[in-house]
Structures are given as structure tokens and as C-alpha cells.
Length: 406
Ligand code: ATP
Image (cartoon, rainbow, N blue to C red; front, side):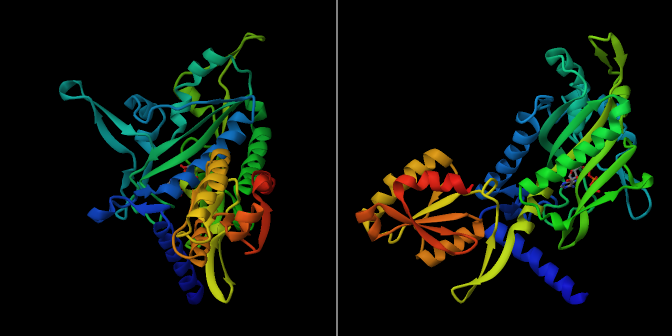
């Protein structure tokens, strides 16, 4: 057991250090000793995060006809958090047994005008308070959903485990409104959708487990919750959650829905699939992290699926001091691929072996090398990240070749 723990600690250290070295994730305010529970995202981290969020939005919003996007403000009228039950109940126990409310309290406005509010601890309320606006603007029929991606803040008593438990993080949430009689059907349905998405972004499904959360551990608004847990190196812990929020929130906000055809008034019930962006990323990185031996040397690489990889291909002239190679690489390969895929970089740093190693760690699926043969036959070498195999591909067919593989 002890050995396993050391191995797991080592794995987390390797991941944290790779994320820093390769420009994914940095400790927040690092030059001032950091601020616990905050992280800053570097160039490749932002790319990975954007890909995860875009993939989510594509599947759950653009890919459906019953979902309405929203981008609500982080600061909300303080009453929202009283009515939602967060002021009274969004607390964690301190060691001395006292309850500590984990919302960040803040003042809005100056002097006597000032009112108390909170940085939102969940994005969900931004959707509930816009329920009426959405219904009035779009006249959706039940069942329908609202979806939002945005920051949430919790003054966690003990932030830890890298980006797993932070004080500032991001959520992707759906509130799916349905008739009470249908809640079980849609609960099951959303469970399936959540699992599908995890697989789509490359989360190792063998490490995902469902936990039926017992009543005493459920949030104050939930009548049924399933946690999807993941085997992190630091233990089996929550990845995402699926909650049946009943009509708790809409009722508290005194909101209702009128079926225009039937003339029937009701308070819809809510199924809430919730995804932490940061935990999605941690699980994706942990699922992608691999070590093997290539050409007699140990290597580490991130086996990202191309749909979320921060870089799809890296373009390299074999030698950086040969202007004819550099010119060809820039104009005939990099420029068209960059225009087509966006997530393309030019890498002429160090020798080819070093470039491959760097791109493996970034998780770039394809490295394209322009060599002297290229100048005479217009073909390039495309190296596959996972197998290390190389093949010659005609420059004119490169875009098609990559499109077929992603
Ligand atoms: P935990 O039990 O781990 O504190 P929770 O049950 O309080 O999590 P929820 O309120 O269900 O979490 O929040 C929805 C999602 O937001 C979680 O499934 C998780 O992915 C993410 N999340 C919650 N708290 C944090 C945090 N402090 N840092 C990063 N992500 C978080």
C-alpha cells in the first residue's frame, strides 16, 4: 500500500511539473508565494480548456434543439443567495464543529448605498433567475434546458490536490426543466449523456464510478444525486454530479411555467447535470498521461484525443539554419495548415529528437518534418505521437490526411 501511495504521489508530481514546464497550468500569483486554491492557465492550458468547453457546448447546446445558452453575471443580487438557501446552508464543518459558509462575501457599491453580495458558488442560480426571460424570449416547450459555462467561487477550507479543489474554478452546468412525472426518465437519460461526453473527451471510463449519494450527504436542494467519481492518484473522488433539484429553486424564486397550448400553470422540476471544467481537465490529463520507451529512451506523453489536444500538429524544418527548408516549411506547410486547423505550431527549437519529446509532452498527435527530400518531391514526414511511426505524405494531401485522422 505504501509503495502504491508513493507511486501515486510521484504521478501527481510528474503531472504538476509537466503542466508547468509545458505551459499548461501555473500556481496563481506564484512570484508572491502563490495564493492557495488559485491557478493560472498558460497558452496550452487555455487551448485545452477552450477545447473542452467548446466540445461540451457543441454537444449539449449547438447539437440540440431544446437547449438555451446563458451567460449570467457572476455578481448577483444578494437576495438570490438568501432565497436559494446558500446563505443559510452552503457551509462546511470546521474542526471545532462550527459551520463555515464557503461563499465569498463582498460589498457592491459605496457608502450607504453598499449592499452585500457573494461571488457565485455555482452557476446554476444564473439560470434559474433567467428562467422567465428565457421562456418569454423563446417560448420553449417542456422539457427544455438552459446551459451555462462560467466561473464559480468557494472559499474552500482546505484547497488541495492541484486543480481538484480550488477556490476559483469553472463549471459547465445544465438545468433541464421537465414535468414532475418525467423526472426519473430524464435523470436516467442525462446519466447516459454525461457518460457519453466523458468518453468523447478521452476520460478513461475504467476509472469512472457512479456513487448514489446518501440523503445525509446531498446538497440542501437535492432529492437524488449521483456523483461520478474518478480514480485520481489521491483517491476515488468526485468528478461530476447529477442532481434532481426538484422544483426547489423555481418555487423559491416564485417562478412558474405556463403551457401556452394547454393553458396549464405549473412549476417544472429540474434535473441538473453539472461538470467541473477543472476536474474534467485533470481527469483528461490523468487519462492521457502515458510513459513508454522510444528508441531506447524513456518518454512521457499525453495521449490526448485530437478533438481536445491543444495542438493538432507541429511543423518543423529538419534543420533551422537551412533557409530553403525554413521557407518551405513556413509557406507551403505551416501557413495552409494553420489557416485550416488553427491549432498548429511552428517548432524549430533544438534537434528533432528534442522537438518530438516536447510535442509528446504537449500531446500533439502529429509532428510534420520538412527535409531535403521535400524540396524535390513535395512530401513530408508525418510522425504519429502514440506509435512513433513515420510516413511520407504528399504536401498537397496533408490537410485531407490529418482531417481523416481527427
Ligand atoms: P466536493 O464534494 O468535491 O466539494 P461538491 O459536491 O461540493 O464537490 P458540486 O456542488 O456538485 O460539488 O459542484 C459541481 C461540480 O463543480 C463538481 O462536480 C466539481 O466538478 C466542481 N467543483 C466543485 N467544487 C470545486 C472546487 N473547489 N474546485 C474545482 N472544482 C470544483
